[in-house]
Length: 368
Image (tube, rainbow, N blue to C red; front, side):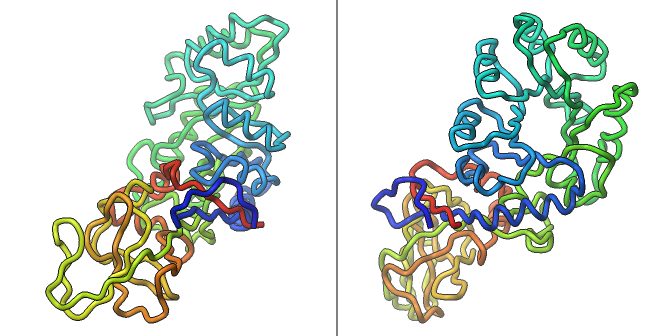
């Protein structure tokens, strides 16, 4: 194991399994077939660390991310393959880094077209044109596509490598409009004369829908061992959890029947009980809304939360767990407690819990 971040004194860490990340990429590639795979590493590789992603995703055809500082980190870590800037540039001065870091950029608005038009002709740029096919978020709407394509075609220093869109409902079992097939058709209808590359499929499309033609795919959440859809387990998709959020038991309290635990005294002992105090709270990214009974993994078995999650601590009923003491490790999410299960119980998705891991969870360990 190799430490990649400095540790604080608190016994709490995010353990990142590079082997699992590489395995998940292999699962994505198996579904992609011959199609190129962009490994999406935005939001610090969904909380797993850009540097870890560079090592784990060495076999990917490219990395896709959002910010130039993350692109700098990827290049500094040794990534030499393409990097796709998913939202393109935000200001004209960003083109200096695009050039320095050899980035491929998404172009999604007329404002970005204007920036390209102002570039010196001797500065070549490779772009993906993004069209809005029904998500109504980013991308050229249908009314702007002809003008955008014409203006970009007039720029000899701009090379259009692919057309792309983003799917709105690939994660829905009974998808409302726009459907995956509908968005594919809409993209092709916007550029019937285009014979180059396409990029459409995200994690949900890649794992839950049949392959659709020769396109590059952009898996994200599945590379980290979490599910792209509510109600579909990561295990059923053949994925392995790549992060274990692990704390330790700080103290163990013996409670008599009728004694209570935590803020609001919401949990009351119905029998003589052992309560473990664990060094993780909502300031560490564990949701305050986690319900009583939500399992953690300690002493080789599951144990339920008891009482309300605090800022720096949570409490667990250890009455049925024999092999546990002060200092015992506790898995809050990971291989034994899927992050998607916790997310579903608090009304969110695994994406949020992983990517919102706060800076004070300082120590990550990369497993070779």
